[in-house]
Image 1: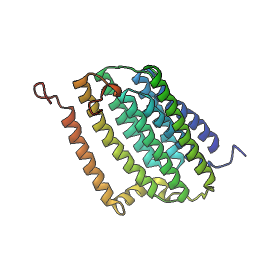
Image 2: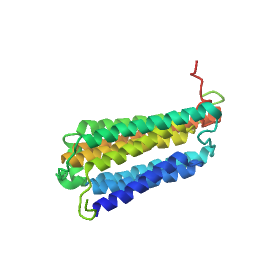
Image 3: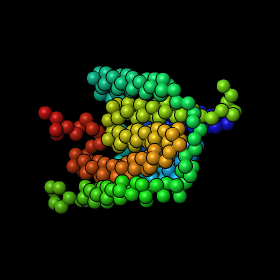
Image 4: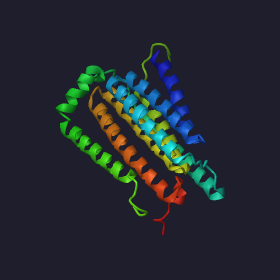
Length: 170
Length: 106
């Protein structure tokens, strides 16, 4: 049953990823991205990461996709489909696809050759809020606090960058 | 293989993550719209999260989940700053096409 669920979700996730890649309209790309994030959230649940699944829906599907849609609405949808600029662009596309396929082949080979037998060892606390919270506030307290500083710096940077420039010059 | 009872091997998760990461990488290389390049980068980060969670499940440890949590925090910071940069570029150059933004090109 789990395997059927996984395969169905995997098909949807890959289709959504291809949709992000191929959509002419950035809005459709953002919506495909939303589908991709939602499907991965379901997969996180199957991987015993309930808390991260919820965070995935709130942060990625909620905040990040909405931010993307806001920016698309603010700046309009100027579209350049792949292969729009003649021969050199077409060659670049072919090179990109070959490079992507080579990367995938390498990782897939390593994954299969690595012989990861299913250990069936459950994650402690099943990835619940309690388990994650205890780890974050004891063993991983420093990275957690540093992440808060990082978010603060990013917020200040975003405000400074997005501010309307005084006069003509920024 | 019995489809109804068998568990999902960790390898499948890793391969799915590799597929999504590769699609994202091709998107970064192929698309010229800065916004869509950003979306592909987010997709790549997400596939890495999937890898981390699969590894956490495989090893029966919580560390991978904490790491994925940190990746999410960094991704949120990155997208906020990145989209602000896109807005600033659009305001000054009136384009989101990365081929048109070549001031640093020699």
